[in-house]
Amino acid sequence: MDMRNIVMLTGAGVSAESGLATFRGPDGLWEGHRVEDVATPEAFARDPALVHAFYDARREKLGTVEPNAAHLALARLDAEWPGELLLVTQNVDDLHERAGSTRLVHMHGELKKGWCLRCNERFPWAGPMGTGAECPSCGTVGLVRPDIVWFDEMPYEMERIEDALRRCDLFVSIGTSGAVYPAAGFVQTARYVGAEALEMNLEPSLASVFFNQSRVGRASELVPQWVEEVLASPPCKGGD
Ligand code: OAD
View 1: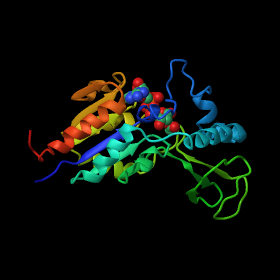
View 2: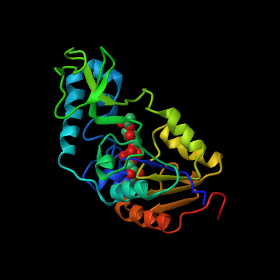
View 3: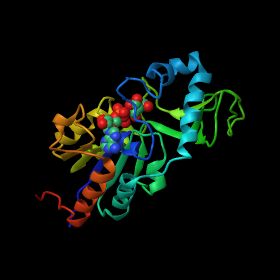
View 4: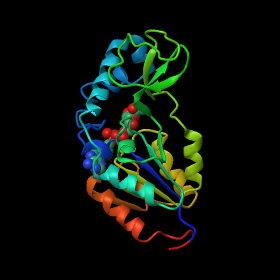
């Protein structure tokens, strides 16, 4: 049987029930900060201590949270799905990999990685980074930044993602508001090549109109239910 290719996109909503805050709360702030004060290259140049403190706090918080049922279900799908599959996450937390997902792309970078602006190496990072961090590769002090894709920067692995989207039969978006491009446009690429598109979110997202189907509710309930459905009757290419 020729299995379908699945591409999934996750956002902050998939980690919300693990206790990590989403970005677009009702007050328009992001954990008390304006986005432009903590998530742009200009912010880092202007006030590196503030930006480091923000990401150091978020990295520390990771140690206090666990993957939830949605992460675990997606990892199960990764392990059991016989066709192609790619999980693209906008999240910088490590909950998908801790749940066991391996076919995974962190398009907006990772909290637990650093990037040296002197030698351009990227490396795992645990604990605080701060303005005095030393690069484990070249030894330079003070030029290590969080390996996070900030606004106006290019997301990672776009070629791999675009390739997967162009070949996918099913595109699934989970827990993302559809406010940030290019991720918000993935559904349109998938639909353009004839894929089905399913959205699972607490509320209809800004991109809902592009999906064939929207399921509204909590990721921890909707995602395990959907994974059961998919694994119970793996669809044939060109079928149904
Ligand atoms: P947002 O905070 O914009 O959206 C989170 C979405 O998840 C909202 O639509 C919520 O309704 C939904 N949601 C909340 N709790 C949920 C739950 N338990 N189950 C299902 N859905 C739930 O976060 P993102 O869309 O991920 O970029 O934001 C995209 C990007 O904007 C982030 O990656 C980040 C940010 O600026 C960078 O850092 C570059």
